[in-house]
Length: 440
Image (cartoon, rainbow, N blue to C red):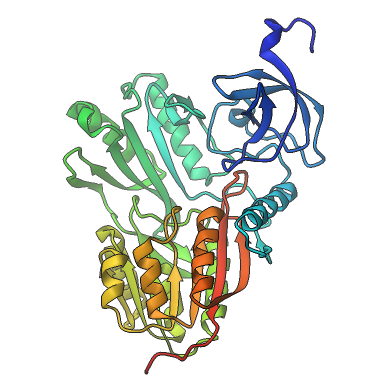
């Protein structure tokens, strides 16, 4: 123990175990496992208690080979909860993500290794979206807390996002903006407006039952309008009404040289460079089924279906969010695409009414496919399934079910959409062992 530490029982020496499902190392203490933040498996560290079941490292006795100094001061100070792995070299992050996925597959009884690991050369400044919380200061939530960490820049985010947070904090510092007590949030997205990167902003309350007074909201909206980085501004009231403060509501994000129209609240990948690589992989696989009927399930704004439309007979995009469907239809019109049809509603409802399709693109939530969707995909018997997953555990479960239905896994690839975090995105390519293309 380091001299002067008191009380001494708050400090322990640990040999760190494997990462848990949240990318945090574990260590044994008193017959149970505790989380040791900012650790790397195999390291020997001295850590102190930091709440129930958690400890923070105060000394690294035996560091891992891939440990590095994190550049972000908010990460070093245990403040911001957005990143978990800045203390690991990027090469080490990719290797450990592969290991975590392969461990999950093995523990699920699946003999599948990860093939390609696809990543960008630059693992910083990739995020094009952010949710900025407002209280006495503007920033992100503290790790494991509702407290707001005042942030003036974020090294994994587009510089415009840091510019906005700095401008908001400047105004809060001199009381040009009120203390919103954490009840207001600004969701921002980088878009190309008149050929220039600008920000779309959606202003909303995090507690619809406690919306700040109208004059305070108006002060915030006026301040946003005065910040040069911000273009489109939308306000979502507690009763669900949407007010356009400044056009445009829909703005283009360039993907593969094409404009994809989005609102500030559109659910969309935040790493555009890697999204383009994923789209190229989907196109290459889908081209093995010429003139196919494609179903893009959990389709969002339809970006996958739209990019597959050139080689498809027709594409159906199924999405339950009406705003996403409207954005997708606008993009299809902007591209002049006529063989992509958007269906608003739940996949469980509309797949049952859908004629046979040859290629299924699945991009479900973290929980994976519902039993109803899984059954309908099995019944539809597409020749090719392109399954995009953000959680290895739910993907493994669904691969077992699809394997039992006669599907062979041809490829399992890891796409590192979220460097400096433990999150992964996976592409599973499955083919029906024996099938015929649906009637043309």
